[in-house]
Length: 413
Image (tube, rainbow, N blue to C red; front, top):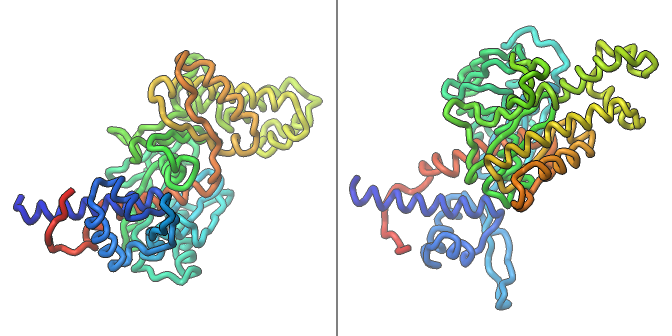
């Protein structure tokens, strides 16, 4: 590599470092950037002027310093370009247009209760929603950096294919990335749904102050997403985070994946419904007895509101198993933060408290408690994370195409 190319690469690295710091912290001053990056004040000043001229950042406000002076703060220019986030869920598929600061500008919800004729019909629904949010926001298609999609796993990330999601079999072997890129004409990023949610939590939720976190989706199925050093951990075969399929009881109930005693078969919304249905066979006087063969999760939450001890005990047992599984996760990975979300967490607050108590009681003794909390983003985490996947690739890689190509004189670090 020539000396000039080295200088350009170093400059681009410094530019990306400045952008990355501003993006993660929301705003930054020249002094703060200099301290964080190790670059001289003059080098930071030059980079900021350059980034501002390119339209990537903007001067936002004046911040009062400890010595009483006021310093300019810089933020990412949210309207430089836009991203699309898509989150596919058993209940709904959401499509959102986001700016470069992760704010949702428009969102479209597509209910999954309808029966799609085929995979093509489902893809057309997503494409129509994408066109709608772009049109409603009056944004040019050429200003869309890409489309991030969070879909139920397992995912073949190399080829962009949804493989065999146990709870959404109609998506089996859907080559979603290829189909969407061909139709839309921009880059599509396909990730497992819980990875997208975890990334949303990392950038815009409770995980903003953490570099390592685990998101656990306690929904009709169970899944998780791992963020390590600010990056999504996908694993060698793209199956990292299949938390729902760790074994809790080798002789336990059969899981949709074909194995026995998976966490999903014992703690998920589907597991709760199966257990309740079986218990109701012996409870002819129970209000849900007539519906025992066709229960939906809303039935469970309605009975909890009425303080029904049968449904409460089943949910509590589900939470207990979840706590055991989380304690194993803590003992292996010891993350800075564990965030729980999903339909059971949102609708039965006691679930989180039980899981947290059990997890802390069974992890390695003597260690500090790991931070555990409930998602504050809720149902928006998936689309935010999917959009942030696109933005992250831009700020860490393709933004190089925007930077000037001349090497100039490199400031000393």
